[in-house]
Image 1 (cartoon, rainbow, N blue to C red):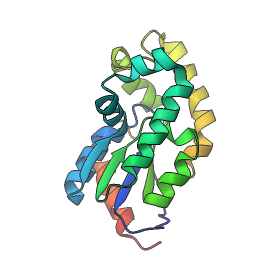
Image 2 (cartoon, rainbow, N blue to C red):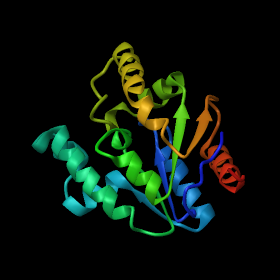
Image 3 (spheres, rainbow, N blue to C red):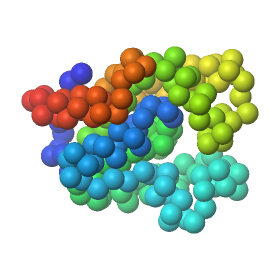
Length: 183
C-alpha cells in the first residue's frame, strides 16, 4: 500500500466499484482532514437538476460519461476537497489522468464477496443492478471488476478491505496513515 505523491494533498479522489464505500469513507476522510466533500454523482444531479438514472435514460451512457467528464474537470479545480467518484468514472475519457494530475487518487479495493453482500442489501437504490438475481449480481460484479481493474490500478494509492467487519473508520485511518508515509 504505497502512495505515489505527485502533488500536495489539496484534492483527493476516491475511486472504486459501487458499494466500495467511497461516499461513506469520503465524508469521514473530509471531516478528519478538514476538507470539503463532494459526491460527484450528487454534484452532477444538483448541477443538471436530474438524477443519474434519468440522465442515463435520456442520453445513454456516452452522453452521461461526457457530462461526468466535464464536471470532473470542474471539481478538479477545487482546493481542499475529497471527491467520491462514481464507480465507472475512472474508466472513461482520460479521467484517471485528470485525477492523478489534480491530486491523489485512492482506489478502495473491496473483495467481490463483500461487494456482493453490500450491493445485495442496496439493490433498490442502484439502477444498474436493481433487477438482478443473486447469481446475476455476482456475475455482473466479476465481469465489471475485470474490465475496470486496469483503470483502478492507476490510482496513486490502493487501500484494500477484505474484511466484512472493517468499517469506514478503519479504511479512513489506513488512508491517513498511507498519506503521511513518505513515498
